[in-house]
Length: 249
Image (cartoon, rainbow, N blue to C red):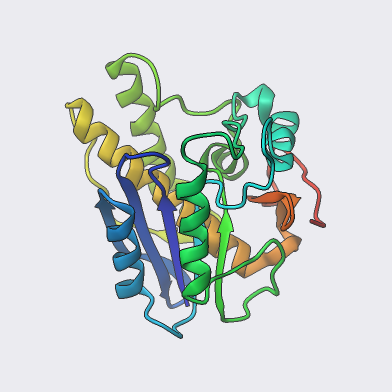
């Protein structure tokens, strides 16, 4: 079983890509990559998880967008539960310029056999996809008082916050169940473009870990905001999580 994380470029930006797999009883880093175009992302998926091979893909992007205007149900719920941590969702609706692109990406994955999984039978092999959101996931996994602000602000502050995320991945995820053991990750670069590329990749690691946590525990240690009809976001809820979420989609 492979656990794939995609920090998807919502409009025209590149995407961070990660694949984890079990090595004994622990997860290990299989692949870490960065692609510029959605077509390249799909080609990468085809190479990592060929037709029929079991895998779950966790995507940081709304691929189910049923609402013409306003906010989706999971976006509202993310603000309700995680707004005080500064981890509310960017609103998605069909009038947004990214909507067609993201919906089609989800359909492209469905055409490859990756069915949406707003509910899942723990540790059952198959081909699944689910929407995830790294910011609430880090609040839950690392018991943070607020998000790590590596996406906006001055370059020095972003670099420092991204370094904290890197450290949490290396030292915090080995303490989770299942543990993810990564011996080394790239150092935090100085340049803005290189910093953004590493940000995408580290976010994809969080996505891939949430995929593994969802598959491993199901609703026992995860919550779901929303449902298949309205869009949904899977968020980990380990025993020490800051926020207790609904268990039934």
